[in-house]
Amino acid sequence: MTTAQSPVERYLDEMFDRLAGTGAPGRRMLAEAESHLLAATEDGIGRGLDPETAERDAVARFGAAAEIARQVPPAPASLRAALRRSAVGGWAVAGAALAWYGTSGVLTWLLGRPFAQLLVATDRFGRDRNMCERPWVPSEPGLDCAGHYFGQLDRVPVGGARFPFAVVALIGIGLLVALVVARRWTPLGTAAWTPAGPTLGLAFAVPFGFVALLLAFYGVVGASARMQNWTLSYFVAGLLAGVIAVVAVRKARRAT
Image (cartoon, rainbow, N blue to C red; front, top):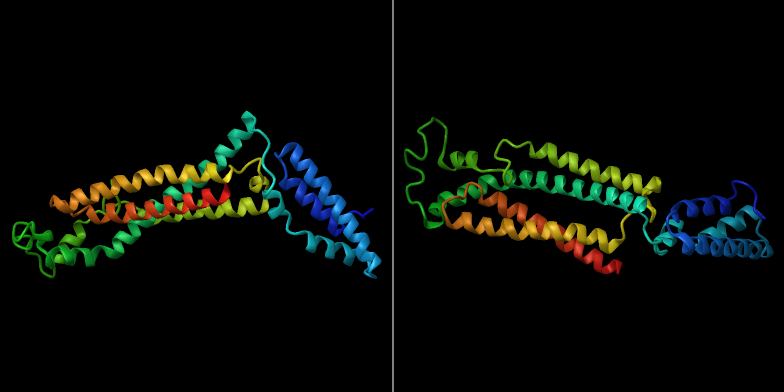
Protein backbone atom coordinates (compact mmCIF):
# COMPACT_ATOMS: atom_id res chain seq x y z
CA MET A 1 0.00 0.00 0.00
CA THR A 2 1.16 3.50 -0.71
CA THR A 3 1.41 6.10 2.01
CA ALA A 4 -0.61 9.32 2.14
CA GLN A 5 0.65 12.09 -0.14
CA SER A 6 2.89 9.67 -2.00
CA PRO A 7 3.47 10.27 -5.73
CA VAL A 8 0.99 7.54 -6.66
CA GLU A 9 -1.68 8.87 -4.32
CA ARG A 10 -1.27 12.40 -5.65
CA TYR A 11 -1.50 11.08 -9.19
CA LEU A 12 -4.65 9.09 -8.45
CA ASP A 13 -6.23 12.11 -6.74
CA GLU A 14 -5.59 14.22 -9.82
CA MET A 15 -6.98 11.55 -12.12
CA PHE A 16 -10.05 11.19 -9.90
CA ASP A 17 -10.75 14.92 -10.29
CA ARG A 18 -10.21 14.85 -14.04
CA LEU A 19 -12.44 11.82 -14.54
CA ALA A 20 -15.42 13.55 -12.94
CA GLY A 21 -18.49 13.11 -15.12
CA THR A 22 -17.23 10.01 -16.96
CA GLY A 23 -19.29 7.52 -14.95
CA ALA A 24 -18.47 3.81 -15.11
CA PRO A 25 -15.69 4.16 -17.74
CA GLY A 26 -13.96 6.65 -15.47
CA ARG A 27 -14.22 4.35 -12.46
CA ARG A 28 -12.74 1.49 -14.46
CA MET A 29 -9.90 3.69 -15.70
CA LEU A 30 -9.13 4.83 -12.16
CA ALA A 31 -9.08 1.24 -10.90
CA GLU A 32 -6.84 0.15 -13.77
CA ALA A 33 -4.50 3.06 -13.16
CA GLU A 34 -4.21 2.24 -9.47
CA SER A 35 -3.57 -1.44 -10.19
CA HIS A 36 -0.96 -0.65 -12.82
CA LEU A 37 0.85 1.93 -10.68
CA LEU A 38 0.98 -0.35 -7.65
CA ALA A 39 2.35 -3.20 -9.75
CA ALA A 40 4.90 -0.91 -11.39
CA THR A 41 5.95 0.38 -7.96
CA GLU A 42 6.51 -3.15 -6.68
CA ASP A 43 8.53 -3.90 -9.79
CA GLY A 44 10.68 -0.83 -9.19
CA ILE A 45 11.31 -1.81 -5.59
CA GLY A 46 12.29 -5.26 -6.84
CA ARG A 47 14.87 -3.56 -9.08
CA GLY A 48 16.46 -1.91 -6.06
CA LEU A 49 14.70 1.47 -6.04
CA ASP A 50 13.49 3.02 -2.80
CA PRO A 51 9.66 3.19 -2.50
CA GLU A 52 9.27 6.89 -3.35
CA THR A 53 11.60 6.71 -6.33
CA ALA A 54 9.79 3.59 -7.52
CA GLU A 55 6.46 5.43 -7.33
CA ARG A 56 7.80 8.44 -9.21
CA ASP A 57 9.16 6.15 -11.90
CA ALA A 58 5.82 4.33 -12.16
CA VAL A 59 3.91 7.61 -12.50
CA ALA A 60 6.32 8.94 -15.12
CA ARG A 61 6.00 5.77 -17.17
CA PHE A 62 2.21 5.70 -16.95
CA GLY A 63 1.73 9.15 -18.49
CA ALA A 64 0.11 12.47 -17.62
CA ALA A 65 -3.23 12.17 -15.86
CA ALA A 66 -4.74 14.95 -17.97
CA GLU A 67 -3.92 13.20 -21.24
CA ILE A 68 -5.23 9.83 -20.07
CA ALA A 69 -8.43 11.34 -18.65
CA ARG A 70 -9.19 13.06 -21.97
CA GLN A 71 -9.36 9.65 -23.64
CA VAL A 72 -12.26 8.54 -21.45
CA PRO A 73 -15.63 9.46 -22.99
CA PRO A 74 -18.05 11.41 -20.80
CA ALA A 75 -21.09 9.69 -19.37
CA PRO A 76 -24.49 10.44 -20.92
CA ALA A 77 -25.19 14.03 -19.97
CA SER A 78 -27.72 14.95 -17.34
CA LEU A 79 -29.42 18.32 -17.54
CA ARG A 80 -27.00 19.74 -14.99
CA ALA A 81 -23.97 18.42 -16.88
CA ALA A 82 -25.35 19.75 -20.16
CA LEU A 83 -25.78 23.19 -18.62
CA ARG A 84 -22.24 23.13 -17.25
CA ARG A 85 -20.79 22.20 -20.63
CA SER A 86 -22.92 24.80 -22.35
CA ALA A 87 -21.64 27.45 -19.95
CA VAL A 88 -18.00 26.56 -20.62
CA GLY A 89 -18.64 26.37 -24.36
CA GLY A 90 -20.40 29.73 -24.26
CA TRP A 91 -17.47 31.19 -22.36
CA ALA A 92 -15.09 29.99 -25.08
CA VAL A 93 -17.24 31.23 -27.96
CA ALA A 94 -17.88 34.60 -26.31
CA GLY A 95 -14.19 35.16 -25.66
CA ALA A 96 -13.30 34.18 -29.22
CA ALA A 97 -16.03 36.43 -30.65
CA LEU A 98 -14.86 39.48 -28.70
CA ALA A 99 -11.22 38.79 -29.55
CA TRP A 100 -12.14 38.35 -33.23
CA TYR A 101 -14.21 41.53 -33.41
CA GLY A 102 -11.69 43.68 -31.60
CA THR A 103 -8.72 42.26 -33.48
CA SER A 104 -10.53 42.96 -36.74
CA GLY A 105 -10.62 46.61 -35.76
CA VAL A 106 -6.94 46.67 -34.86
CA LEU A 107 -5.94 45.10 -38.18
CA THR A 108 -8.24 47.40 -40.13
CA TRP A 109 -6.66 50.41 -38.45
CA LEU A 110 -3.17 49.11 -39.30
CA LEU A 111 -4.15 48.50 -42.93
CA GLY A 112 -6.33 51.59 -43.21
CA ARG A 113 -3.82 54.12 -44.54
CA PRO A 114 -2.40 51.80 -47.23
CA PHE A 115 -5.99 51.00 -48.23
CA ALA A 116 -6.89 54.70 -48.40
CA GLN A 117 -3.83 55.33 -50.56
CA LEU A 118 -4.96 52.47 -52.81
CA LEU A 119 -8.39 54.07 -53.16
CA VAL A 120 -6.83 57.38 -54.16
CA ALA A 121 -4.40 55.75 -56.59
CA THR A 122 -7.18 53.78 -58.31
CA ASP A 123 -9.92 56.46 -58.13
CA ARG A 124 -12.03 54.18 -55.93
CA PHE A 125 -11.24 51.26 -58.23
CA GLY A 126 -12.17 53.36 -61.26
CA ARG A 127 -15.52 54.57 -59.93
CA ASP A 128 -14.77 58.14 -58.84
CA ARG A 129 -12.21 60.25 -60.69
CA ASN A 130 -13.01 63.35 -58.63
CA MET A 131 -12.61 61.85 -55.17
CA CYS A 132 -9.76 64.19 -54.20
CA GLU A 133 -11.53 67.38 -55.26
CA ARG A 134 -13.94 69.59 -53.39
CA PRO A 135 -16.54 69.17 -52.01
CA TRP A 136 -15.47 65.57 -51.29
CA VAL A 137 -12.20 66.59 -49.64
CA PRO A 138 -12.26 69.78 -47.53
CA SER A 139 -9.44 72.25 -48.08
CA GLU A 140 -7.88 71.99 -44.63
CA PRO A 141 -4.17 72.78 -44.13
CA GLY A 142 -2.10 69.65 -43.74
CA LEU A 143 -4.92 67.30 -44.75
CA ASP A 144 -4.07 65.15 -47.73
CA CYS A 145 -6.60 63.20 -49.75
CA ALA A 146 -5.55 59.78 -48.45
CA GLY A 147 -5.56 61.07 -44.88
CA HIS A 148 -9.10 62.34 -45.35
CA TYR A 149 -10.39 58.98 -46.52
CA PHE A 150 -8.39 57.14 -43.87
CA GLY A 151 -10.32 59.11 -41.26
CA GLN A 152 -13.59 58.00 -42.83
CA LEU A 153 -12.85 54.28 -42.80
CA ASP A 154 -14.90 52.12 -40.47
CA ARG A 155 -12.58 50.09 -38.26
CA VAL A 156 -15.04 47.29 -37.56
CA PRO A 157 -18.32 46.21 -39.18
CA VAL A 158 -21.36 47.90 -37.66
CA GLY A 159 -19.46 49.52 -34.78
CA GLY A 160 -18.16 52.53 -36.66
CA ALA A 161 -14.81 54.28 -36.63
CA ARG A 162 -15.02 55.27 -32.96
CA PHE A 163 -15.77 51.78 -31.68
CA PRO A 164 -13.33 50.77 -28.85
CA PHE A 165 -12.05 47.77 -30.79
CA ALA A 166 -8.74 47.51 -28.92
CA VAL A 167 -10.54 47.31 -25.57
CA VAL A 168 -12.92 44.68 -26.91
CA ALA A 169 -9.99 42.63 -28.24
CA LEU A 170 -8.26 42.73 -24.85
CA ILE A 171 -11.45 41.68 -23.06
CA GLY A 172 -11.88 38.74 -25.42
CA ILE A 173 -8.26 37.66 -25.07
CA GLY A 174 -8.56 37.99 -21.30
CA LEU A 175 -11.60 35.72 -21.28
CA LEU A 176 -9.79 33.09 -23.34
CA VAL A 177 -6.67 33.21 -21.17
CA ALA A 178 -8.79 32.92 -18.03
CA LEU A 179 -10.56 29.89 -19.51
CA VAL A 180 -7.28 28.20 -20.38
CA VAL A 181 -5.95 28.77 -16.86
CA ALA A 182 -9.22 27.59 -15.29
CA ARG A 183 -9.22 24.42 -17.39
CA ARG A 184 -5.61 23.78 -16.43
CA TRP A 185 -6.01 24.18 -12.67
CA THR A 186 -9.70 23.53 -11.90
CA PRO A 187 -12.33 20.88 -12.72
CA LEU A 188 -13.37 22.96 -15.75
CA GLY A 189 -10.88 20.88 -17.71
CA THR A 190 -12.73 17.64 -16.99
CA ALA A 191 -15.33 15.92 -19.15
CA ALA A 192 -18.00 16.97 -16.66
CA TRP A 193 -17.50 20.61 -17.65
CA THR A 194 -15.89 20.73 -21.08
CA PRO A 195 -17.98 20.04 -24.21
CA ALA A 196 -16.84 17.21 -26.46
CA GLY A 197 -14.36 18.23 -29.15
CA PRO A 198 -16.71 17.84 -32.14
CA THR A 199 -19.48 19.73 -30.35
CA LEU A 200 -17.22 22.63 -29.43
CA GLY A 201 -15.77 22.65 -32.94
CA LEU A 202 -19.22 22.99 -34.48
CA ALA A 203 -20.11 25.73 -32.00
CA PHE A 204 -17.22 27.72 -33.47
CA ALA A 205 -17.37 26.62 -37.09
CA VAL A 206 -21.05 27.25 -37.83
CA PRO A 207 -21.42 30.88 -36.64
CA PHE A 208 -17.95 32.00 -37.68
CA GLY A 209 -18.28 30.30 -41.06
CA PHE A 210 -21.64 31.96 -41.70
CA VAL A 211 -20.30 35.36 -40.64
CA ALA A 212 -17.24 34.92 -42.87
CA LEU A 213 -19.39 34.31 -45.94
CA LEU A 214 -21.76 37.16 -45.10
CA LEU A 215 -18.98 39.70 -44.53
CA ALA A 216 -17.13 38.62 -47.66
CA PHE A 217 -20.32 39.19 -49.65
CA TYR A 218 -20.85 42.67 -48.23
CA GLY A 219 -17.18 43.46 -48.75
CA VAL A 220 -17.50 42.68 -52.45
CA VAL A 221 -20.69 44.74 -52.66
CA GLY A 222 -19.00 47.69 -50.97
CA ALA A 223 -15.94 47.52 -53.21
CA SER A 224 -18.12 47.66 -56.31
CA ALA A 225 -20.64 50.26 -55.12
CA ARG A 226 -18.50 53.23 -54.01
CA MET A 227 -18.95 52.33 -50.34
CA GLN A 228 -15.32 51.49 -49.68
CA ASN A 229 -15.30 53.22 -46.29
CA TRP A 230 -16.47 49.94 -44.76
CA THR A 231 -15.14 47.50 -47.37
CA LEU A 232 -11.79 46.92 -45.67
CA SER A 233 -13.31 46.19 -42.27
CA TYR A 234 -15.70 43.65 -43.79
CA PHE A 235 -12.92 41.88 -45.67
CA VAL A 236 -10.60 41.77 -42.65
CA ALA A 237 -13.28 40.60 -40.22
CA GLY A 238 -14.57 38.08 -42.75
CA LEU A 239 -11.10 36.66 -43.33
CA LEU A 240 -10.45 36.28 -39.60
CA ALA A 241 -13.84 34.64 -39.10
CA GLY A 242 -13.06 32.24 -41.93
CA VAL A 243 -9.73 31.31 -40.37
CA ILE A 244 -11.42 30.59 -37.03
CA ALA A 245 -14.06 28.46 -38.76
CA VAL A 246 -11.46 26.42 -40.67
CA VAL A 247 -9.36 25.82 -37.55
CA ALA A 248 -12.49 24.77 -35.63
CA VAL A 249 -13.48 22.29 -38.34
CA ARG A 250 -10.01 20.77 -38.40
CA LYS A 251 -9.93 20.37 -34.63
CA ALA A 252 -13.43 18.87 -34.63
CA ARG A 253 -12.38 16.32 -37.24
CA ARG A 254 -9.31 15.37 -35.22
CA ALA A 255 -11.45 14.88 -32.12
CA THR A 256 -13.80 12.40 -33.82
